[in-house]
Length: 496
Ligand code: ATP
Ligand code: MG
Ligand code: MG
Ligand code: MG
Image 1: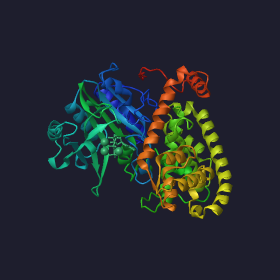
Image 2: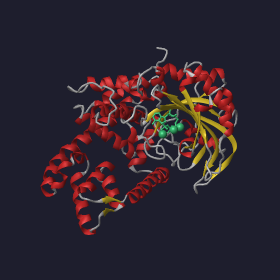
Image 3: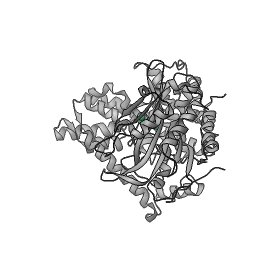
Image 4: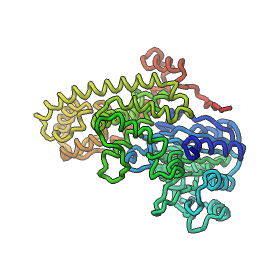
């Protein structure tokens, strides 16, 4: 089909390779390469960070790719939006083109516009663009140059809007390359907007002290969401109705006992449809992460998303094996583009099975203990979700500590302990606090969480000096079969 997602992906790459002399560079893995500032690769530009900062040579003057991105944790965290709307995922593909000190604003906007109106056949009347309004703290003025470029291209002034730093100053993480951006939005018949493409003019770096300083060269970094583009070009109401998600939703339905089919309802009370969307989304994220060698034992984010998915599979769809079944659908829809999904299938499914068994055992034993616990602490009778966490021990300890403290606020270190040691998820801790009429010290919790994360990264870095531990042996094995790349220098795996 002309508007199939693989045609949309190929069209993008061909357009930049053949019409505009770009080189096709393969997607990096979703594991950030020696970059502790992000938990996962969150944009196509991550693998070029060193180029923008001037510490690595550009692999070519112009590049294009489709990048596997995960937006869970860190600055760009879309986990809470998943299931609620039709266009934010934990995993998505970002199509992007780059100029490393080569072309700049005018060419970048023109190339984008010509692709949308030409090969993709969008109508100019359905498009709206935004540009950077300037920001005193960052120290940059309104990007009038960008505004005038859109005018020259022929976009009427009524559809060129200026926005502040929140929407139109793009940053990768707490530090790193950044710059003013221009976003292209699709205007739906009801007037609502979907952002489809972001073009960033990388000209600055956010340093550790928070200051934004200018770079020696100016670069272009763009990102277009493949799933959003597929929804538009396939004429369907949301990303979940495209060829990237439909087979996954169908497989959930086919493999769940007597549950009604997905109906595409976005009302707040459409809990079944939300469960369909969450599971379909998480299945893609989990499959891609496992194929890239991220493990639930080293990534809290992945572990929690796997647990959430087992819970949905078991409670809503009555089939604890769904993640493994859905791996096949993810491999079928994405395997041609990302061959690691097929190459790592066996290992990935072993990890899924292992986690699923662990989860099932935990649940059975906790359910038993939970029944005992309700006798002592009747207030927990309504907190059924807590079954999946290290409930018994965690709750007793929590009650004893709070009784000693005589405080109305659960301190950050205790919240972190419930989270890290006992596996309570944040929303569960919130409800535990609620039934006990307590507040949570959120700032304190986040501080512990970020300290923990940086310790994790340091431990990972220092492994070379601590040979012999179980963890190192595992990493060594993985290096041998090539799952992890631990070289310090970025590698450009350029496709022929
Ligand atoms: P939004 O404002 O919709 O959250 P964004 O401005 O955060 O998007 P960018 O960081 O500019 O997104 O990323 C570039 C493009 O990637 C976006 O224009 C969009 O098409 C796509 N995109 C961003 N986040 C997601 C997501 N969570 N799921 C799917 N596609 C996304
Ligand atoms: Mg966003
Ligand atoms: Mg945006
Ligand atoms: Mg954007």
